[in-house]
Each structure stands twice: as structure tokens, then as C-alpha cells.
Image 1 (cartoon, helix red, strand yellow):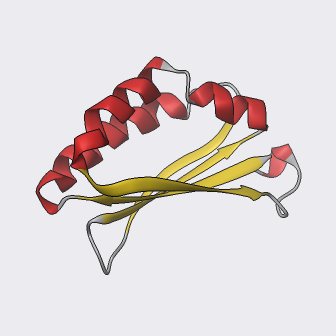
Image 2: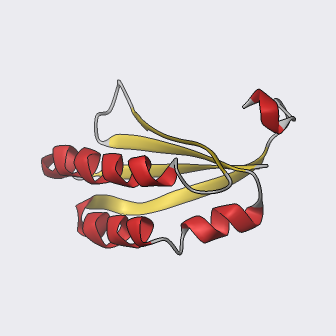
Length: 102
């Protein structure tokens, strides 16, 4: 299993648009084969700061996500709304280690 935490800073005037586009991406991402979680979080301290918590069964499943139509549409839609380039940080899952615990 692999988790990627994607840090995104959004221009203040595009927060609502970003949430709307990202919600659509979420709806389709959680239906992907191999997806375990696809959460979007917004900082309480800085409303322009978001975190995607993306968990996939494998590196291959995570890579397939980036080929989907909904991801490509999201990426194109939000690119000019970001205050700086997004940063994805990959993690190996320690716990829970079993798929059925997700």
C-alpha cells in the first residue's frame, strides 16, 4: 500500500472553485480499482492550504489514477488557481497493514 499526501496552496479568490473541482475528482477517485482513501482536507489555520490524503493498494494503482479522465480534467481545471506548485509526498503504510482493515 502507498499513501501520498499532496500539499496544495490555492489563491484565496479560487478557494470555492477549487473545492468544487476537487470534490468532483474525489467522487470518481474513490471508485477507482485499487483506491483505499481519497480525502481532501482544508487547514483550519490557513484556508488556502489543502491536503489530499490518497491511499492506494499499490504503486501501479496510484499511477493509474494519474491517467484517468477525472484526474486529468481536475489537473487542467485547477492549475491556474494554485498559489504555488503542489507537492506530493509518498509514504509507505506501516499500520494498518492489512487491506481489510482499511
